[in-house]
Length: 157
Image (tube, helix red, strand yellow):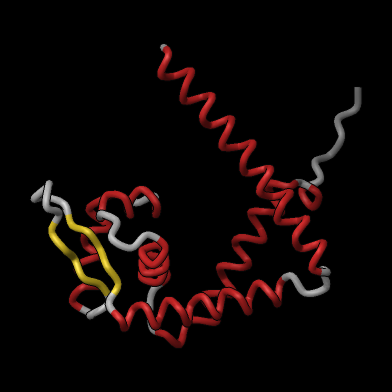
């Protein structure tokens, strides 16, 4: 039986990976003038989505070690971007909140993201865009279901 050569140009995983990498690179280029690192704007962006989360929760979201998030939080706090508030029940935990300055920035970042999405989806009609998103969400749901099954099997053993 002949082995068919791999077609990376038609492989969904590679395509999604390439799109993600290229979109991040273009987003970085568009926000370079804001003088924030990717780590900083990702921190602020995710905090805007989860206001009041703890540093540990944010570390899980960002897939970073808690100490890395703690250090970044300290730098952002000193820069006037965030506020850290003590947890009433756990003296070791902080809840994170954006300052008005950071809130304005995250709205600006969101505007850049919307424009970038419009640019890279140009040529796709609204119904095709919606169908593409629906299909990708189904793929994501399937992957989450597989992850949950695998976790349940581990928990059973």
